[in-house]
Amino acid sequence: MSRLSRLLWCTTSFSLALGIIASAAPAQGVSRCPLNIRRAGQRVERPDPAAEGAIIAFLGGPVTVTCGDAVMTGDSAEWRQATERALMIGNVRYRDTTRTLNSERLTFYGTRDEIVAVDDVRLVRISSGAMLEGPRVTFSRTPIAGARTVATQRPRMTLPSGRDASGAGQITIVDADVAEFIGESEAYATGSIVMVRGDVRATAERARFSETAARAVLYEDAVIAGEGFDLAGDSIVAGFELGELKTIHAFERAVASGSRFELQATQIRARLAGDQIEVIWAFGEGRSLAASSQFTLAGDSIEFAFLEGRADSVSAIGAAAAEQRADSIPIGGGELTEPELDASPGASWIAGDTVKAWFEPDDQLFPEPAGDSESGPGNARIRRLWAIGGARSFYAAVRDSARSLDASRNYLLGSEIEIVFEKGEASSLSGVDAIGVFLEPAKEGEGG
Image 1 (cartoon, helix red, strand yellow):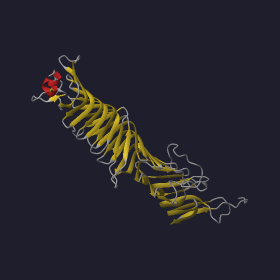
Image 2 (cartoon, helix red, strand yellow):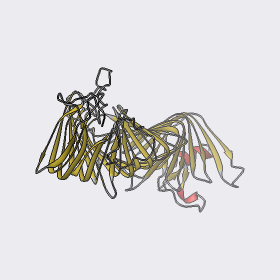
Image 3 (tube, rainbow, N blue to C red):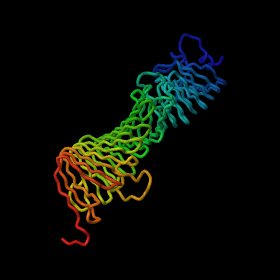
């Protein structure tokens, strides 16, 4: 029997470590996982030029190697006695109690119980189906708490987000410079992250995903974009329930925007149903500000409520104010500013402790002004404006009794003020405990 055969098939009481009796290994550490060659084809051994007295063994395939609960197969293998290292080559398959892995090459380092897989790597968590794919994946075989599985060189991570009522559930795909599995339920990603889940797309520099907590946390210039909205902040927490994205919470310099609106605040939180927004809250230190092409709104906090995917109402609370301007306000053009509560030509505004607006059933956030000739869901209209608590307003209104085509002017103070709109134009104004001034334009051609 050759020396290699004796080493591989020795029946002494010593364990085999990477194909050699453990007691004969160099004093580099003791293998935590003795390797057993279960199947191999032709065997060739040569002296190791880097280690006197040690050998290198080449095993023809197919090769099957076991290590505790781990089973590895490949087309061929290389074993180095001095370093207690085994290299599996070609169509490599790996499996243990917690994961499966496919790759073209896999190296097992016995002294530290570590595995490095390269070239077309695909690792799957058995318990959840979470997957890592990429050029290189490294992990410790022993399934201890907090064990790390690290993928580098721009891997892809696929994460199931729980299960919905049908038992299916959507998946989350994450591309990043580095991706990690921690234990059996946590995952991390760093570097130019792109996350896609259904119609939702997100970017950030760092991210953490928790299957147990059913949430994803994005850090550093985080952005989540969905159907009709973008939400950005220094960090964002996305929460899942039964496989569905339910909440998005942006922190620090938070911005929510769409094709016709923008919202800025210290914090913005959105509740979703079927990837559509149901409610958005803006709050935190400082003022919450919102704008469309024709409206600005401010308050200590702001809430948008939606009905069947369309904006139903918006409320501003705490020194609230809403302004409608005749000139266009750029959307996404920088920092929003407080409404200008002045009496300049064309100004129309309402203010109070609380200001609330209701919209027509077919409108979107902050509708376009009257006169927009386009049809479709973008041609939205405001239906009612209401202020309570130290309410005041300065609004233009066209009345049937007006003596000219120019809008009349109303300045009103009261405990409550309500403005009703028809076809996007103010048609009536009323107040509780109110006093005010009504200014009607002079008839055309009249002097004065």
